[in-house]
Image (tube, rainbow, N blue to C red):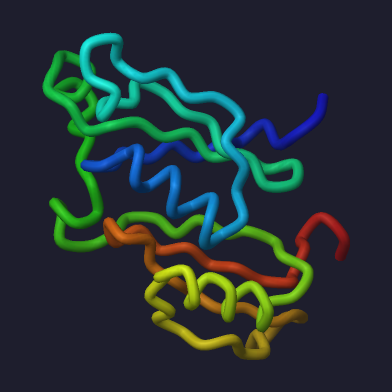
Length: 140
């Protein structure tokens, strides 16, 4: 089976802008996007890939599923409950590119303490934490 069987899902107040940002700043590629027929600003489901990894995302919207799962955004929550880790070959170059594309770097590239590799952390425009690093747990 190609790709990872674990795929994070996120909600964004402005999903189209989030898709553009994640592709431009973090290097994801848009695999699929299903917009609302009546309003293209509403993304029901989108898939972004980077290497063998994927994230899925959609627009925050009113409805039964939103209420059932209590979906919210990091900004609306006023904090985060998760961090998405992405393996990249060159942390310093990735960080520079992300910063130049508008990512807020909250922790500069650094050598990991207690385990191999380098990493850095950044925020997307809606406050989600993204951690990028060279540490590949599949290869140790």
